[in-house]
Amino acid sequence: MKVSNETKIGALAAVSIALLILGFNFLKGKNLFEKKATMYITFTKVEGLNVADGIKINGLRVGSVESLDEQDADVTGVVVAFQLTRGINIPKDSYGTISAVPLGSTYINITLGSSASFLADGDTLKGVDSKSMIDDLQARIEPTMENVNKALVSLDSTIRKVNATLDEQAQQHIATALREIAQTTQRINGLLEPGKGALAKSLDHVESVAGNIRDNNDSIDKIIGNLNKVSRQLASSDLSGVVESLDESINQLNVLLKNINEGKGSLGKLANDETLYKQLNSTTNSLNILLQDLRLHPKRYINVSVFGKKDKSGPLMNALPDSATNR
Image (cartoon, rainbow, N blue to C red):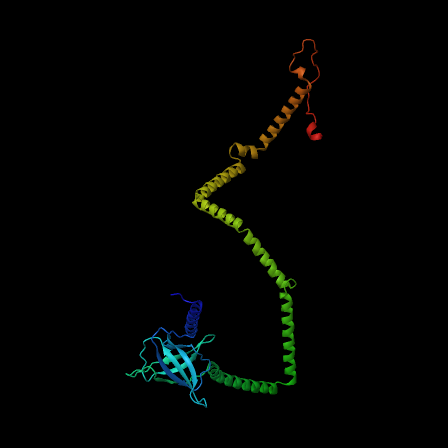
């Protein structure tokens, strides 16, 4: 049996329409394949509530809003039909309220009662109107605004009393003080002005120094490490022994200097015996004359010449001037 193209197109169109209906209802929160119980709840106003919004019990989503209809021609109330997607037992004395989440969707919150009998499919749940977010915010703000108004009235009364108490001279003093405070504030702003103020420049210098320290942090760490190493070496070395040895050497040196000052020993005699000093000075002078005479008249002391004449000049009696010192 051959199926015509028209039949195929018709079947495809029917399937597409069915899928479209199923998808549309799914986007609205309806699931045609789940077993559902439809219940109703009536509110005076349903601001912010829409079809497919959730039904929650203790924060758990148990269904969704199916439709919103007026209760009568005068719209004295709004009947909300909702479907349960879970097998939940809802006591008959339960009630529902509309709750709104800031920057979120609105939902119906069901508060369970304590009745032993439960609602069935098609029953109506009691609805309790709740304040909207704006009404709730306004109710909370009104006491605060009232307190603020009272405070402003009290402040105004206090200012009037102060103005009545202060004379004209005191008011002038207060005005002068306020001007000085303003000038001081202006000067402080000038000090803190970026790139120009003295305090700002100082802070820039401090920041520059801190940057240099940060850039040389590795070198500073090495220096500190070396200092720690030297400190450990000094701590581990026998400083007490070195100090004791140095102290003993100083004591011996003091004894030696004392003996020299008192004329004891060879160094003491050399330092304190004037006669010995004169004799050494005379001997040194004679030796100097002898060496100079030997330099000037070597033939007188060493005669190695075969044909030369013997030096018959007299010996040198006084030392010649030192050429090194007279230069």
